[in-house]
Image 1 (cartoon, one colour):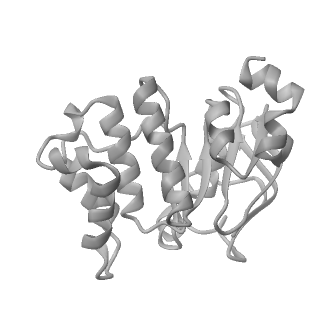
Image 2: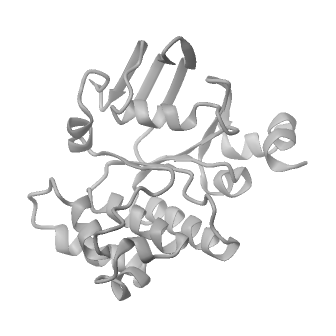
Length: 234
């Protein structure tokens, strides 16, 4: 579904990504691991069209993405839930969710809204509440719900557990597992909690200083001594 080859991205003269190659097959949940500053968010922003690569190709269902503006990429079904949630604080929960479906003209929006409420009942309880008054966990639920209402074919999640209490983090990971396994949604997950991310993934990549240094089955990477040392605390 997603194929990236030879991707290089610069901020001015500074290299952020160098010769990155990555694939995500339909129905996969693939994790991208890496420390702060490794280039994970840069990669997602480049896929989304928010950053332009200096070289390389990004293809989705065989069609090139790197020349498209970001709203056209969203229209193809490539949806990013950004790090830090980026919800609209002055809008209500309902209005934020509707923004996710802003470009849709199909009749299934209400049904998808109900599916979001089944995943996150707390959002239904807070529909009239301003999003800026939500807790961190509720804001993350809203960000994911808004992304799901965009009818994603590929959902990219950037650090969904960042700053969350353990019990809320576990609930978020359970929802990610559920939408992948029960709905067959293709997911590219960027996450620093390597243990939990690998436990729900089929494959994973490790990004370091803008380069892919490891890739393979999630279970194999869980047993990799270098991954254990760098990301699992062994």
